[in-house]
Amino acid sequence: MKCTILLGDMKMNQSTKKFDFHGLGLAIKKAREEKGWTQSYVAELVGRDSRTIMNIENKGQYPSFGVFVKLVTMFNISVDQFIHGDSEYKESSCRKHIYILLDSMNKQELAIIEYAAEGIQKFREERNPD
Image 1 (cartoon, rainbow, N blue to C red):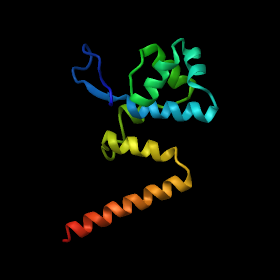
Image 2: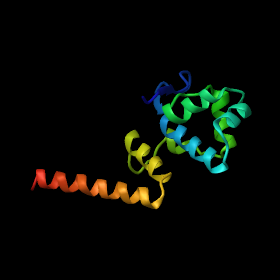
Image 3: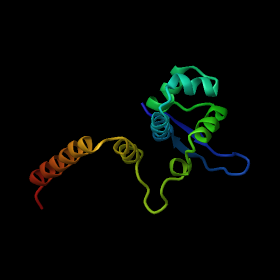
Image 4: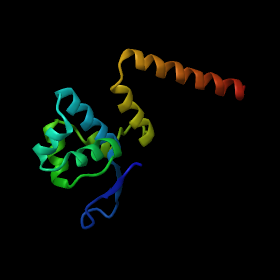
């Protein structure tokens, strides 16, 4: 389940924007693993329990603002890509999630994904010839 919250300052900007924390949670997980840190260690650093960190990383649970700031600062994660997205093309949350997952895979895993994607494409072409 992907969690979303609404961002926006109601006094300054009447528009609101949905923010999907799932991609950011995966980026936090990747950065934590690159440092060799456990969820328990990160939880201790931010003053929460390890279940909170697990839910942020794996379920896209949104943290309190204070924990959010601590996590993105600790791991030097730019949140622009998650809040604003790429201005040239608006990609779906699903596509962004897939990119993040692909980023964490090794060559063998990427080869498996490549073959699967090619198989899906071939199936689609055979099913719907132009």
